[in-house]
Length: 447
Image (cartoon, rainbow, N blue to C red; front, side, top):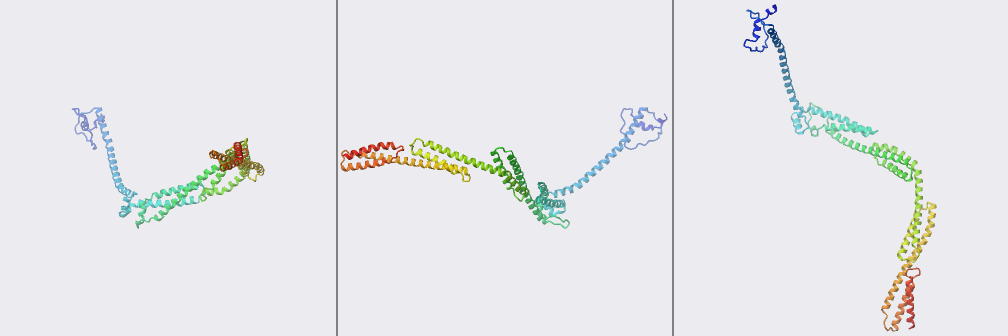
């Protein structure tokens, strides 16, 4: 009870619920001043006193939190204003340094100091381009391996990236704008020289890559041909492998000699050719001799075949002129085959000459028979024509003059028929007409 008597009863009465049931108002944020009671009041129970103490604790607890929240809002607004004040000039500088002529040219004329970031960037890229192009030139022009070319191409790409960072319009106007407060390393002449050098190096790298590709493909073909030759089991397979091997050696010579690949293969090409001669040379010569012998044997066989066909066709004469011509052509083919055999092959050449003598004689006989057949046909045809003319011109009562003319014409017919040789297709018919002409001639002579 001593503790309860020391509490400010007036303050507790103000904060306690009133008789009307309305809740007390929210506590004020101002500190509470406890005063000594002047007049004793009605004492409160324990529950009311605990509720009053809880309300006081909430008042004391919420006041620092609200003060801290206000402090945070004040710092945030300050940061926003600082960002705005810094961002506006930075944005202006960013826009001024955009790589567009419509922006850059006015800045160069009226506010060149705003382009300082561009000047610094151009100088940096120009310096890096200088270093990269020098490294690329050393690696490409003095390459000792494909790795050097690959690294040189990489440096060349870096150089191109740095040159691409230099705006073309800005570069063209650079020499017109020089400032006392900025000393640049950039040179428009050096820039153009770099671009030309980069183009030359790019073309050189392209040639080197093509040459390296040719070397790789040809080397693979070369190795495959060697393996194919080693595995060859027949003459035909060896010939195919030898041809592929020789083709690969010839293709090595097509690689440009000024490239790294060309220099590499030229140093080994003599060894490759020497190996080819040692491995393939003797075998190829033996194969060539064998192939030549096979060719000679084939020519002699073909000549015998043509001669056999000619002899077969010439059996059981007489024959017509066209058939004799076919027989003559067969003998000519046989002779032409024998004439293709070279004299350096002693055995084949000797055999060919023996057959050639026989075939030439047979060809001569066939030509004679063909000509005799042609002459016999012409003579018979002429005699038949004269006989027909004579029969058409015989008068009913012939006088001496007419009879002499008939005798002369009959004698001409007999002479034509006597030209038909034996062994021709016209011989039998000519003999029949000759007998009839002789009988008629005798009748006219008796008269």
